[in-house]
Length: 314
Image 1 (cartoon, one colour):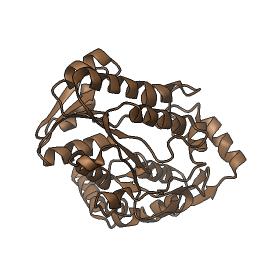
Image 2: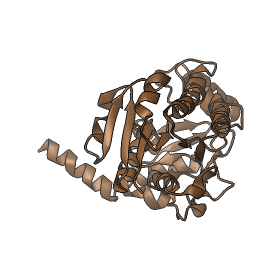
Image 3: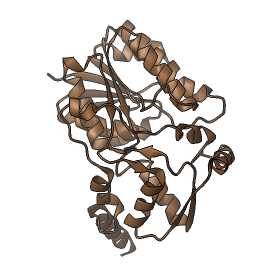
């Protein structure tokens, strides 16, 4: 059955992939964005429509949502502009409350919500507010489905590519919480899980943890990225006191590539205790199996990137 789906956060990394995946199933997707140029890459997706409005405006959101079959919420931030957690609370709690109210006003029962592994655990504002957002969804009395992915990677991510960029400019990379464990999950597997859950009634009221097939420490992951790029780099694991200090210093760096809140989040391993993919009939990729396609000097994407560079020089 084809559906009409409204998506919050659809212009971001996961949203772009999910819009294309849902469109492949024949669904019509309305992507809500405050900045239309940021979503122009989705205009070519069959069945996709871009609506420019403030997602915190419940009246406007309810008006656009009317006539849809489901709302998908992908909104999340890894860092806030200020301090104290208010930015996290606005994105992870206030927006969720508004989305739930908009669903009620528009008569839309189906809500698919992306949270994060360890939501509600640890000391970081990120994880605490993720947990509060989940609580609002569970209390909503809507037909909800919840996803808790580990760190998501893909060719256009801000995770592996950020480390690749840092490694490219420095022979030494000091790393906070080097022993933190991750099970990075490929964006293609994540959007497949969303697509399958949207089509299944037995996914209602379920929470799915999503992890890739491999578990890495942060230090091993960064060293692997360096090897794929053919770089000889010194990755130095910092003791916690220096890692905390690094986070405090980066709190004041424009763009916050790292922060004291990130440091706190890394205190909880991002690995699954539930086999969410298995419950949906999906066998997930591992990072070393998939990311090599675009990170490696011998990978297909790398060859294509070098070809384009040479073409521009010509």
